[in-house]
Each structure stands twice: as C-alpha cells, then as structure tokens.
Image (cartoon, rainbow over all chains, first blue to last red; front, side):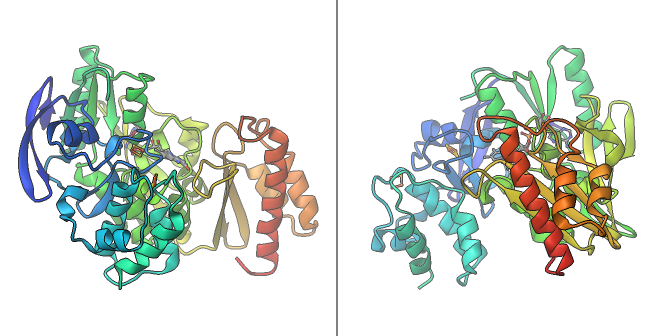
Length: 155
Length: 279
Ligand SMILES: Cc1cc2nc3c(=O)[nH]c(=O)nc-3n(C[C@H](O)[C@H](O)[C@H](O)COP(=O)(O)OP(=O)(O)OC[C@H]3O[C@@H](n4cnc5c(N)ncnc54)[C@H](O)[C@@H]3O)c2cc1C
Ligand code: FES
Ligand code: FES
C-alpha cells in the first residue's frame, strides 16, 4: 500500500514530460501545476467544481484540477493547454471563431473541446456537445462563439 | 489550498483499506475513505471537515467491477458516474447519473461518493431503492451485505469504518420500463428542486424522490395511490402529494408549497406518460 505522510516527492507526467515535485498529500493538483510547474493555463475560479476554469485532461478525459489531489495524479497522463502547443484543432478553432473575450475561461473550454475531439473523432450529436460544454462557465457569455468553434474544430 | 495536512493512503485491497482505517483511527486521526474526492476536497478547503488521513479506495479492483454476473448486475462503488453511463447496463441509473453535476464532474464523482456523501440529494440512491438492489460493505470486522431498502433510512446506516464496495441489481430491473424526471430551479445543471425516478415491476409502478424532502426516499404509500388506476390522474397526484414522509423541503431555492406544486405537475406528467404509453 502506498502511504504518504508529510512532504513527499512524486513524479507527474504532464504534457508527455515527467516532472518530480515535492508536495504535501493535501496539495491540490491545480496549485501544483501553477505554482511548482509554472503551468498557469489552468485557472483558479470557484475552486468548487462549478466553473470549469481549472479544467485539464487526465487520461483522455476532462477533469477539474481544483478537485483532485496532486498525489492522485501519480501514474496518470495529464494534459494542459501548454501541451497543445498552439496547434491543436480546438485552439485554431477558438482563434478563428473569436470564441473568447477576456479569456479567463478559455483554457478550461479548450481542454474540454480537446478531449471531446479525442473521444469523438467525428462530430458528435448536438446533445453530446451541449453536455460537455455545460461543464464550463463563461462570465463574458461567449457561448454562441464557443459553440460555433466546436463545429469549426471538426472542419 | 487545503489549510492543513493529512496522510494519504492508496490501498489495493479492501482488507488493506479497512486495516488502514482501523490503524489511523486508533491513532486518533479521524480517517475518511476517499473516492472521487470532490466533496472531501471542497469540505477540507473550507475546513468543514479536517480528516487526519484519507484512504483512496478507487484503485481497489473489486470496487471497479461493472458487469452482469448470473442474475445480478454488479457495480463496484468506485465506478464513476461516466463509466456507469457509458456501460448503458442499467438505463434508469444511467439517466440519474447523467443528471448529477456536469459531464466533467461525472468523470470523477463515484457511485459510492454519491451514496455516502453529505449533500442531501444522493440521486443515485433512487434507482437502487426501486430495483431491490443489495449493497455490500467492508470494514475492519469483515464484510456484510444488506438490501438497500433496509439499510438506507434517510441516509446509509453504516459504521464510519465501513466502506461500501459494490451494489448488486437484479437483472429484471435492467430492462424494466422506467422514467426519470429532474426539475431544477433555473439552470439544467443544478441540484434538484425535485427528482423523480420511476420503475415498473410488471404493471406496478414504483417511485422514489430526491430534493422533495431532506433525504431521498421511496414511499410504498405513494406508490399504492399512484397505482390505483380507477382514480383520475389529478386525484392520484393530489393524494400522493399529501403523503410525504415529512414536510416538503423549504430552502432559499424554493418553498415547500412550490415544491409540492412541482411535484403534482411532475406526477401528472408521469401518469399521463404511463396512460398514453409514451414512457
Ligand atoms: C459541482 C457539483 C455538483 C453536484 N451536483 C449534484 C447533483 O445534482 N445531485 C447529487 O446527488 N449530487 C450532486 N453533487 C454531489 C456529489 O455527488 C457528492 O459530493 C459526492 O460525494 C461526490 O462523490 P465523490 O466520489 O467525489 O466523493 P468523495 O468526495 O470521495 O467522498 C464523499 C463522501 O463519501 C464517502 N465515501 C466515498 N466513497 C465511499 C465508499 N465507497 N464507501 C464509504 N464511504 C464513501 C467519503 O468518505 C466522504 O464522506 C455535486 C457535486 C459537485 C462537486
Ligand atoms: S476552479 Fe475548478 S471548477 Fe471552478
Ligand atoms: S471569455 Fe471571459 S469568462 Fe469567458
């Protein structure tokens, strides 16, 4: 059985690279990504699982990194916007479709869309797109543009 | 940030988990079983709870089973709501899971976490109450099982040191006629104003509710009224709404009166769907 007390060094596989980080078992993945690895794309918002600003992808599925311990991420493949390299279909579609205003929610939406495309390589039914997008909130209400960008991502 | 420290354990069997619980409890560390973590992390962050140890049970193989075995569907309690939806094995449970939180959270929230969490809604319990499901528990004194109906009274009656490991659902329920209606106050994704789950065993309607009172429940008195098809739909819905086990829930989202109003409309819709075969 794995047991961690006090500060421990763990390996995290983030965007295909392995990093060693010293964490407390109570450290939240979002804080470790931002503060220790300098990966600041995932944003703190509500910290309750409601807004989706902190969304990353874990083993291919979207996850709210404010509701995950860093120690839980050991052995799993984590992706953040930094790993998309500016060239992912979701990123191109968001830029071409002007699918943001202030941009605070954008990283979260990008990771949801990136995972959606990986799970559904061809455009899924509308209700599925709606279900996935409903996990995230945009205070600037760019929802129409974001929805259009999802379809552009599949063009 | 969680403003205090705890020990993190990741056992690979139920026995290891239960032993770790007992050991940390005897050290006065108030351990907690940890599954999806969504409730535990939020409550730790706000200091509503302060466990000295969390025991992450989601890597235990038995808690990840999801398959039909003879006359039962077995669902390990570490399965996420998404996995249960994707399996499509129990359509009523799929509908209930698909309306809890949002899609991303469904990829983390586990069946066990929803059943044992402190939030009053526990919407996955409704299909289990209706389908004669059993639940198995495991703790430092070994394992036991009980029917959900007998063990779920307002909340699951278990010792803190027991984890729930699996639910077993008789296969008759998997392809039984069913309906699930969740009403929220504003947004589609929200806690329920009321959730109604319905399952027919043969020609007999069973119903269970969440959000209506301060705990999820199935009521055989309400079922008997709703099954009295000699009476009109309106009469049955009205009479059923007078038979709640406690006063309808009253909070800042909705008054008791409003919840009763929504209940009556929802029951009428359900009974109409039954009468005209659209369910
Ligand atoms: C944004 C959001 C929206 C939500 N909306 C809804 C909703 O609409 N309807 C609804 O019903 N719920 C809703 N919930 C509540 C959610 O289902 C619960 O918080 C649930 O507890 C989370 O499951 P988890 O696996 O993350 O639990 P955890 O946080 O891991 O655990 C929660 C509790 O359950 C205990 N526990 C977990 N697994 C076991 C087990 N196998 N045996 C014994 N004890 C166990 C833990 O010790 C802890 O006390 C929502 C939650 C969030 C974050
Ligand atoms: S910051 Fe994680 S969901 Fe809002
Ligand atoms: S673009 Fe500002 S919050 Fe979405």
